[in-house]
Image (spheres, rainbow, N blue to C red):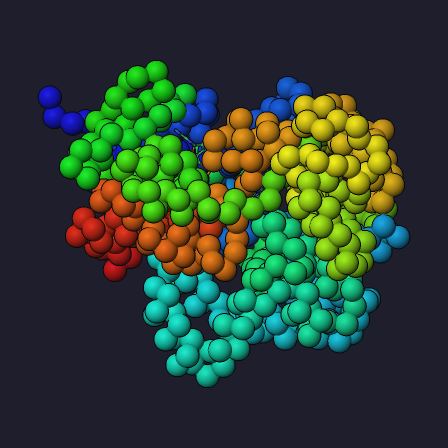
Length: 532
Ligand SMILES: Cc1cc2nc3c(=O)[nH]c(=O)nc-3n(C[C@H](O)[C@H](O)[C@H](O)COP(=O)(O)OP(=O)(O)OC[C@H]3O[C@@H](n4cnc5c(N)ncnc54)[C@H](O)[C@@H]3O)c2cc1C
């Protein structure tokens, strides 16, 4: 019997589905295999608290995906994908009730920053103008396979100011901020974005991450998917199925079967084997692919050891809240209208202490919480008049060795997660939302252990398929031997966030991997998409 599938994609996260769509567009018969009972991976939406309350289980806002060519190339609007444009994009609130908001309009943002420093306001505008000058190049570099290290180094050396750019790419956030800004409030406005990818003010590479996040949001927004983030994977699935692709959920791959250095089938947990004739693309985290699905026998000891040393990054905890009604921020209505709110003291040293406590294994004394105003941005997710929020607490220790809150006795996550969530709600009620505690109808907490149980691609409760470090980025992601989406097995590719440009809802690793696969199959990407 002929082999039914030309290509198998492991994992139905948005990157796996994006890659699958481009393969199907080229006429390949594609099957996507997903271990969970529904599709989407870290772009899913579920009734986690109460019936009728639709929580985005993981990601809530789009930043980089706002400028993905995949949105129109895959005609996602035709398959039900619609954005809600948030304004303000995000607000940073301080415990004394003051705040800064980043708006869609740069003048409004500058006005907000000027409350704290007129010089910083002018600096934001200058940085934004610099961003606009390099925007096209930035969009291209995120949505293309990365240049080799040698090509990148040669380019930087040949450009005027190229080595300054290289310095900036390595610079810590603290060093850059001290050069650029006067007010601590402006520094934390930028710097709290680094916490989304687990970078402390003193980690190399933090400056460029904070700059990129802030400027992308200023220009493209921090947008919410109408009806829930799952409408992104559902739209991708719609496109895929319209192009003869198939998806199988509840199908966990236990290993990839390789013969003569070529993948020929996958075996599912339970024993079923599914053959594949041409190629396999994996969007699971790269350690899982290399160490579990392929194994040291296939990839060799050297490469397996490198993947064991791959750094995963920081763990997170998530609290989902169904609310009696809307909440009110101490800082006023703009905070409540923002998609995201960051709430911290106006101090970079606060971030350093947070990372110091967490990296020694302590529950932090002042946790950093990303407040997601789900229902304020999209009321369709809740029954009329009710409210919904999500709190992403990051970083937290994976193994609890101590407690800086002074309130939590448990040293396992099953003992500590509810008391720690109580502590967090108390902090938010005290510092930012006085009526929060009284509004909670139902609370569900996912510890780092819960996250990794639900999602094998969140090892140790990390959310980025590998830490964002300069030595794990670009063509070095996940490791230099696999920095072009190719694995040691010649027809097995990487197409998830463990590859350039990394984590976040971007669709970029999936689309970039497809470009490499097209090259290897001697297909013309632009021609197939009709963009040439
Ligand atoms: C709490 C949280 C909040 C976040 N918030 C944001 C945000 O607001 N904005 C943003 O841009 N990003 C956010 N992110 C990050 C973003 O969601 C992810 O980086 C991105 O969605 C990852 O997509 P992916 O397709 O590469 O991988 P994943 O979504 O991880 O997909 C991998 C898939 O593979 C499946 N899988 C794993 N192993 C197997 C196996 N053996 N067999 C079959 N299937 C398997 C998994 O179940 C999963 O569906 C957040 C992440 C988390 C966890």
